[in-house]
Structure formats: C-alpha cells, structure tokens
Image 1 (tube, rainbow, N blue to C red):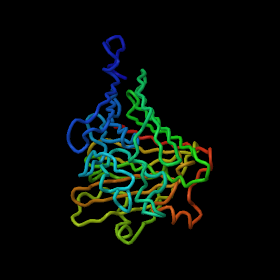
Image 2 (image 1 turned 30 degrees about the vertical axis):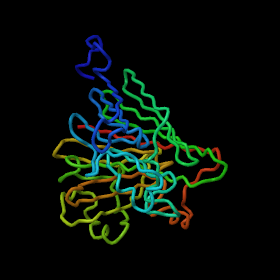
Image 3 (image 1 turned 90 degrees about the vertical axis):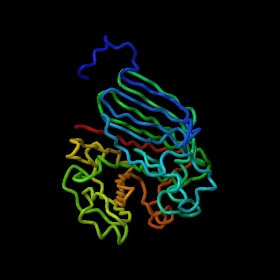
Length: 323
C-alpha cells in the first residue's frame, strides 16, 4: 500500500491490530469482542458470544453496518428463542447468521431465524500476517457444527467469511442458512442505489402486499418514511462463470461502492430487506440456501436444505468496499 514502508514499522500492530476484550458495562457487559483494524481496509468488530458474527464496521472512518436501537446485546437462552423473540436481541451489525435449524418465520417448533446467533463460539483464535488478520472458531447448534474463518486484508477493503457446516449426528437434519448483511446510513441513504448481478436486473419478487406496493423503487434508498413497514423481496440470482454472484450498493454522496459477493453454488438465493421507518433506515442483503418463510414452507416445496450424517457444506461470502 502507498506510504507503507515495512522498514519504518516499529510493530506490526501499526498495520494490523486485533484486540480481544470483554465488555465492561452497558447492555453487553460480560460479552467477548474482537476488534480488527487493518491499514487501508475494513475495521470490524467480531462477536464470539454471538456465533462469531460481525458487529459494527467502518471503512476509512465511514460506518458501514446498520446498528439497531437495541445495539450490542448478550445472547438469549434457548428457551427464550420461541416465536419472534429473536428480534428482541437483534442488534444489527455488518453480518448476522440465521439458521441453522430454521430461517425466517417461526416453524416446526423453531423460532424466527433459529438460534445460531445466540450460540457462543469456542476454540477462538486470531492470527496476524503481513496480509491481514484471520479469526477462527467453532460454533455448535444442535447436531450441526460450524467452523468459521473470518479474514480482513491490509489495503484491500475486504472482509471474507468462510463457513463449513457438518452434521455430527446420526440422522439427516434440516440445515438452512442465511447471511443477514445489514447496511445503514450514511451508506444506505439517498441517492444510493442497489444493483444485483452483472447485467440488467429484472424486478425481484415481493414477499407480500406491502413489498409489492413499493416494487418500482426496490433499488433506491428511500430515506426516512414515517409509518413505513418492512419490505422483503427475493431476487433471481445470476451466477458468474466462477459460480459466485454479486450485489452492489453505490453511494454517490460518499463516493463509495460496497460489493457483496457470495458462492451461489451453495447459496443460490438472495433476499432483500428494506425498512425505512424512523429509527430504522436499513438495507438487508441476505444470501441464503432457503426461503424466509420457515422450514415447513421449504419442506412443502421440496426445497428444504438438509445434511446427512457426517456430511458437510461450505459457504462463503465477501464484503468489499472501494472508492
């Protein structure tokens, strides 16, 4: 990177720093955190007690992630995750993982979006190299084991997440997964635009009447809309020759473009969540292997992802910012 002479560096922490801590006060008191900072890249807060999900994030001082009014919070106990209680501890952040037993609407005895993001990571380790930082850890959710690797790159403006999910049990089990990438102001503010795929994109499919009413504006940041309700769409995913797909958010006001890329071989679906009400102002981009209607709906359609005993699945996403 320009201006970076290795001979002038007293400590590698000037270029890539990983600080592990335990929150001392406030709602998240007692929760673990790892703050990753890299020269010329994306700075991101990793949350080990929330499944190694990604919290607040910045690029050159510009906040990228939407943070809800709830903010950083401890996980809920399994008994508290029935119905829609998941929302009561949804702090937003750059990426929240939904699954692994259920994604979307409460279904077959599992609450909204499952319990993964309320599981603690174990065997967490951080590695620093000249290229950047790597965090690894293991999260257990029932019979499913997820091994996560997070990398940030010096001078590249990129965060990558690679997950390997394995069925440790003796029976075939549902294994839906959705990556809830949450973007907020100032990145997702007028006149920001969203594009999906490398070619002209057809209109997405609205989930319900509320989304259908605003279909013509699905690709534009709506700003703050008093009284608005959430809008959810599903996009038709177009894969590049390498099997990956992309969605881009371009902010002319900031001169930045954020690109979300994902392996569409194992994440063939993309959902979009927009909520422009006061105090929200969020865009959710959600690569997934399932719908957001719950596992019973996917089962009825013959589209419920499952893993046989001993089987494993690799999923990957990358978040890049340039400008």
